[in-house]
Length: 330
Image (cartoon, rainbow, N blue to C red; front, side, top):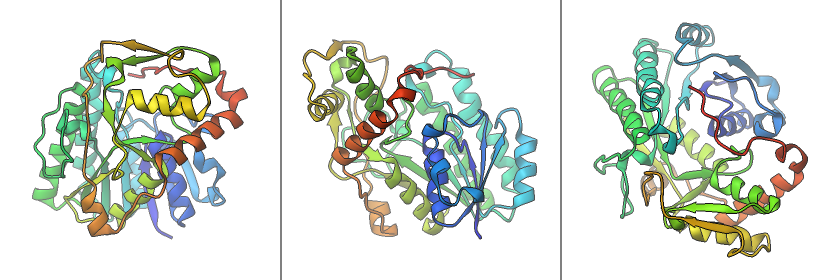
């Protein structure tokens, strides 16, 4: 049985990758700094192969030796690292904490992992934020112009990994996904938060008047793409994961959700001029992963949103009592 170590296994993306790998017959070792959350936020709890998963509460910044000990004991062929400070807006308030995890945490971890020859692939979950605001369908070779501390801190970690790849042949591959969404996502994210606010009758604030444009890719499509990169990707290469034709403004996205829930849009939103220093547009091309690795997204934006609406409806008693805002953890 193949083994994979997933760091930040109870994060949104990490938990779905855990579920995907369990369904594909992997033995999965999960590491996260936080305890496992409510099971409705952890898709792998519903896997028929859950007995092949073990969870270990460890912090990449505080428990490096414990993580390395676990890795040496189980000797995973693949390590996927999703540990990050990932909230763009708050990176302006606590930039040092974003660099500590997104850069220095990576440096300390991979400086040790590069010495382990049992590792066949290290997946680094990067971000299109390293490019800054984009107007074109960017390829992986595009120049970097990060415009937020989050993007800059992630780029700093990426650049260190590039040096390890070139000097030591460290088997790193990079994934950069469009905006990921789906069931089990953190409730403060735009799609679940919009659905919840509409159910509660609360006004949805659209910062920057909702003009920011994003592409949205479903989390199960991302998990499949990630494992294609892990199993067939070329070491040292970057792979974009994005749909082909669903660039949409936040204004139009919220309006779509209102229509799907049969709720009046104009009465449900409040337009705010300030966009809190976030980039106005991301547009990345995924031709490389499609042509080289044979990946294609399967879930449309409409299908994914309807699934999320149904998931929130089904779990409303629990979800309605959960925090709806981002809670910062240093």
